[in-house]
Image (tube, rainbow, N blue to C red; front, top):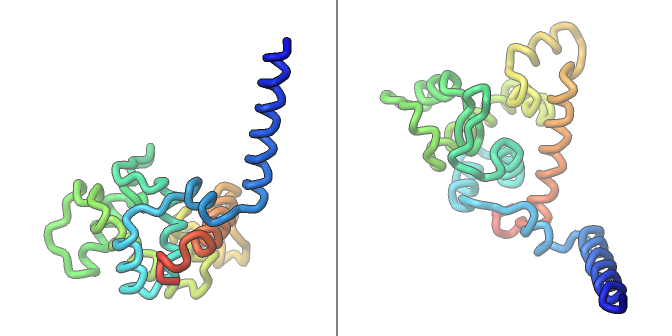
Length: 181
């Protein structure tokens, strides 16, 4: 019985310690829960496309949790979950001539295309939340919502935008210097 009580007290102490750390959110804790992979690629393409590196990292985390081989049920591929048709269009816009779907599994190419696309959406909509909505739900949906004077119509997309904005702040706080931000 004493052993059981001791184990219970120990478990309660560990849970309390985790709760305190979770509430305080020190940088090391945030980095543990929100990894930053491919730092040089993220920093380089953020700089090249004049993006907040924390925003780029947040989109990657939300889309794929930094898993280069991620593939969605809709056919989106790689770190930034790009659809092959979208990526092929980006390749043509950026001077590419020989696009292959398999290229989307390459972190450098995937983040380059995704960063270009995110910059394109930010320039088109001139608002980060609207650009993120278009990244998630597609430009046609966002354009239709805007024409009708309505906000984001998909609850999933509203949650996506809110989460990416939250993740951007987490990445900024946890990795500010490492991201160059």
